[in-house]
Structures are given as structure tokens and as C-alpha cells.
Amino acid sequence: MTNIVLKSPVVTEKATALAQKNVYAFIVSLLATKDQIRNAVESYYGVEVGGIRITIRKGKVQRVGKRMIPKLVANKKIAYVTVTKGSISLFPKA
Image (cartoon, rainbow, N blue to C red; front, top):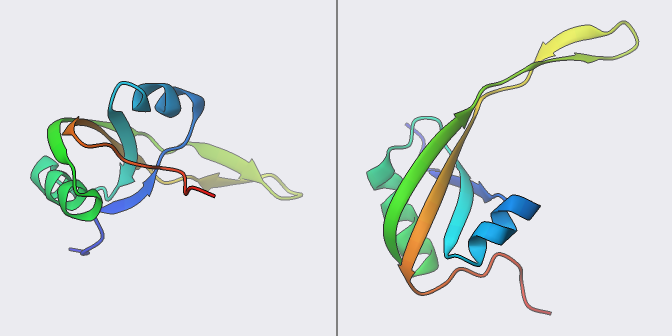
């Protein structure tokens, strides 16, 4: 299994609204468990995790190119992490 658990934070309107409630969304590896996600977030961001909810967005078929050839978009696993102590800065400060 790969050592990369956290792939990237989700930065959308809905995720930004949840961040005000100390709930942060991350795209994670499809093989990652809740314990692995908890350890990765706590060690990388230095915060205390209260809870984790996970959803899997199913991949869809998109038609691409001039001949509209079908292409399968991969599944995405999204973890919603509730932080009890500390906060996560998703945007770098200028």
C-alpha cells in the first residue's frame, strides 16, 4: 500500500463553509482507513482530530475528444475531519 494517505484538501464553497465549523475535507487514498487518516492529519497539521466521516464519490463515464469516446473517471474517497483542538490553514498567508 502506498504511504500517501492525504492527497489534497477539498477547496469548494461547501468545504469552505464547513471549515468555519472546524470540519475540513480531504481527498484521501481509496485504501486509507479512518485510523490512518487520523494519524496523517494529526502528524501533518499538528491538530487533534475529534471524528472522521468518509464518503466515496463514484466515478462517471465522460465522453471526450472529437469522436466522443467514453472515458471512465476514477472514484474519489473524501474524508470529512472534525478538529477539536487547533485549526488548519488551507490557504497560504500572503
